[in-house]
Image (cartoon, rainbow, N blue to C red; front, side):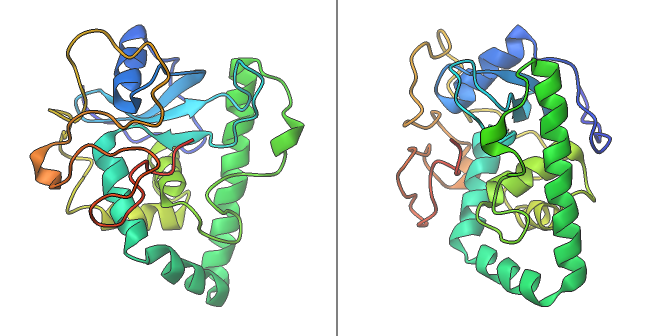
Length: 228
């Protein structure tokens, strides 16, 4: 399967059972309330999950798009550890054109969430009404969210997410598959919530062990990728 560039605001079909199995392995826990897979590896495996704005247990869930692929997650964590977010925040404060584009990204995030909510049948979620994610619309607090949006909705929607994707090119690019060894493919997919534990085994090209959620990696980056 080849990767296609999504149309901004468009959502693909619902995930298959095979997609959900891969997601559970990538995340190290049973996947929950995924509505669509808006970005895929060139091999077809999920890169980003689109999740309902209210989980089936009733919890509001503002992180509509989140990264699931361990290699991208680790790469973005390196960027966060490098201080890139502070630099981006300085630029947002000084560049009115960039700030306006970032406001547009915030609105695009909310519009996409509304569509995902309609598809999921969750109805209104007033607890997160007007709240996007990642620090939008005025700050950058989580690059994983911005990269997830850029991969899900395509280039040109979130300028800072697009920049972050360019910056992780030493570790991940859309043209190559990095799935081999990135998560445990043996046995059954996780049946218990192991969200505090990262997926097993990253490719040797990353130079990093599997991330442990809630812990710091060897480079000082958050190992859990900022995912909920």
